[in-house]
Image (cartoon, rainbow, N blue to C red; front, top):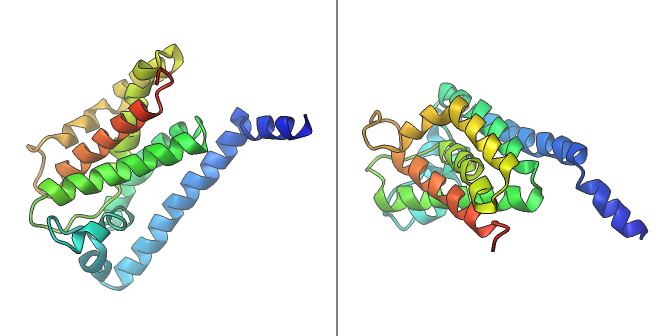
Length: 196
């Protein structure tokens, strides 16, 4: 009985909120630490660990490319949505967060590797799109009105970023990473659906 109460206490909203801030905040701090090192080396890490589409080496780059950014402004543009969406997903639990993040990461990398242009791709925006897509659709898969209401609020506040999945956006933006990340988020929501 005592073990059950400890497990229940670990899953309370307050505990998940604190842990979510710690995990997501630590991940963002890691991105800034990597960006500092990358800047000091004239962004040489991008050439080594950025994702190169359709190359054998590029398959390993799927694991590293979201950790790198083109410059500080690029990282800054990803920071706030990554913190917000990551925190909101984390409130559903560690397993849900890990699944959504991994699916977004792999979906984004796979899309860039398969259909990316000829440039090296870096950046965490695929994760942003994946977590956002997860939050947008999970309520509909779960038939959960609270999650649907949250998705409507998020869509009204951030829905404009979805244009970043279209090939018509600026040439320096990887719409492939955005589209793949969003697809990964939808797949994660489907896999975690309570109806399954």
